[in-house]
Length: 305
Ligand SMILES: Nc1nc2c(ncn2[C@@H]2O[C@H](COP(=O)(O)OP(=O)(O)OP(=O)(O)O)[C@@H](O)[C@H]2O)c(=O)[nH]1
Ligand SMILES: [Mg+2]
Image (tube, rainbow, N blue to C red; front, side, top):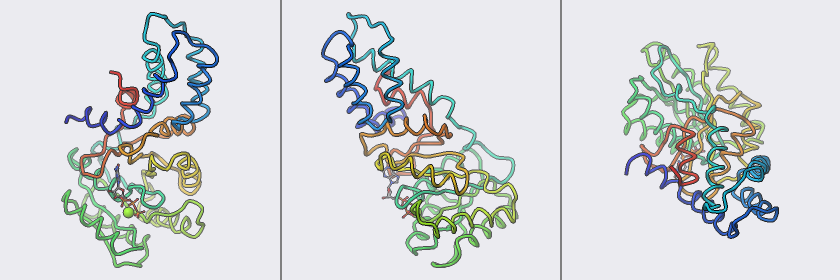
């Protein structure tokens, strides 16, 4: 399966829900208000968000449609154009490029969203682009978390800095930067423990990791990537809101798009926050991370290319 097929396949559930849903709605050859209401409602149900759904409705209502054409296809084209114009500016390929000096990235998010797995996948791409990669096991909550990151480090063959379970996450990050600067690593990825965005003490601990990294490198963390699970639905909006208040987010990765019919949530996020979208997670394996491309996302989402 080539990358595009994989992407389409990963998106099958979301795309199927969308195209089939539209087909069901649009049985007539014209678009009247009733139809428009249904389309809007359907888009909201697909998690694209109230605002985007209403914008798309407006665009469709203003469009002259040829009754000889397949209407659901026409609407899919409109949707595709909308997605590309909204998301093209959020592409961010520079994150994966080879860096001249150390780039420290803090990986954050709530429990179980795919932070550690994404670090493994990111490392592979960074390394293949010629970066010297080092990982910091700053999720010291559970011994299994350190072990999980270590497995990824072995698999991708990158260095890892770790400490014992229960040790200070910030001190692990500090040690990792020290090592990175000393031995000319140019990418450091810091794994953090999953935390609920409304738990104050855990969010303080998270802030401390960033503050401590600054002591040794004032530019660190250069990137703060929030990992979001597509299956969490509208809750991701609140996660972005709260994590962004603690340390400004520089990019997002949305995972588990392979397992949900609600991939539309990425559209809602894109519209509301305009944060760079670094990559999308489409499975559990090391190659299941796709650098974000608006065109590809739109093609896969509408299943037209
Ligand atoms: N289907 C699918 N599963 C994924 C994806 N990313 C991660 N997972 C799975 O989700 C589960 C949690 O992943 P982790 O990487 O451990 O998540 P985490 O955010 O580090 O979890 P905590 O450290 O416990 O907060 C694992 O079973 C992963 O294999 C993805 O893109 N698609
Ligand atoms: Mg983890």
